[in-house]
Length: 152
Length: 139
Image (tube, rainbow over all chains, first blue to last red; front, top):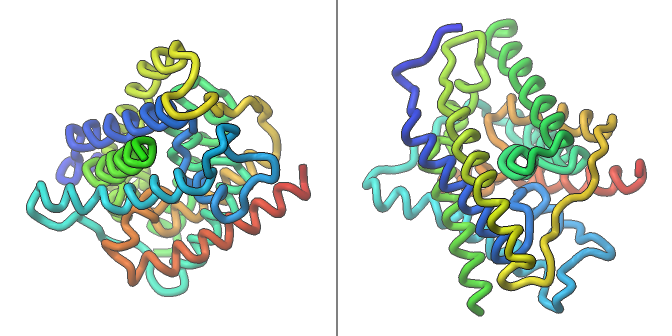
């Protein structure tokens, strides 16, 4: 293992992480919902039959509002820091939609992603989420290993 | 109305946090996942910061009894660790490793890099639909 000191951004990443944790906390405090993006999307694409808010409010609108906010957020950071958000793709062409499909079907079957199982589940000390996080971390590390050190 | 404004702002904080933390950059995500190459540990700090803040605040929020604008806290009650959970997580990890994008960053960077993002997100949504249908059948 060789550490990439040039790319290492511990402070910015810690601050960004704290902002993500705070947003998860606030969504629970305000709306009583787990901040899991795959679940938030899933509730729009295929709403649960008996799900939804029991307080008479739409189960779709809060999801859409949260996602609109998530799209606006980076532009505010861009404005404040005065330069575009660093964004270098690692996949191109057909690999992108294929990867997207894996991410979608996997998070739907596994009931969560990096935000739901990672930020929220681990903070609740859920063993189920810990098992999910360990599984997707290991499979992602293996895939990157194959791409970068076997195929390449 | 107030509830809607709050939720929009919370989403904005989330998207801003992803941008500040480096999660929107697939190369940085792949650098974190590349344990056996030139490893960038930054994203462990994103995860750590997020979990610690949420962990500390969670108890305080729960003490309030109910959310500000809803009737109850919707917290997953299932504890089972089954094949479905693990298989789903593994499939997700494959996609995450291939493109360096998970659902939150894919949505948040959609307008920053639409030429790459649209194809990923459209098929991700299709995958979520198929996964949900399959999941209901298995259960």
